[in-house]
Image (cartoon, rainbow, N blue to C red; front, side):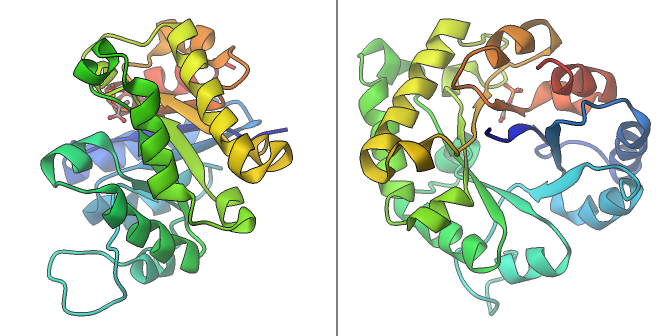
Length: 249
Ligand code: PEP
């Protein structure tokens, strides 16, 4: 009933040549038809990557967006521009943006509002650092991220969002949350959505897991009832491993 989604976040990796090569490889690889597959390249290459993928069902996303309308904001890319380039998804609040660019939940609200106003689906990232988990504060922290980032939205707006739970201690470290840890947090996130928006709406929101997800663990993670797919970093940089993850449901 919920969309199964696997999104590959290429981050600040790949040259122009390499990005096009990977797109061309993905365009011909066998991918499960019941999964929404998204690639999220560096923005400078996105139009070329998109045209290399034009004969496949793979969708495109951006890694970041401005929280304002078009205007004098050097270096930024607006939701209006993203829409005009035919892009359907945008990451919001990836932990690297929260940590290195000081993006607060309040900043992210502006970005989400811009994206929704231009009919782009935000993939809202949340997740705790290791110290918060060790203190037993991970549920509170993720609850706050969800409440402050998303709870201003109407039911219809929320239905146009995807959530990605990414424990920061698992991102790029090779350490994956166990299947039980992932389900525990995904179930918790859905329960918060139920409280605010009701069961029907909460049941329709896809919640992706991110953090060292790879072909060897994707199947176990995706088998959980509240894990609706993955946000993939490192393993999305190679067509074969990304495809194997997509085909893990
Ligand atoms: C990410 O950065 O969103 C991510 C999940 O990275 P990795 O898969 O490399 O841990």
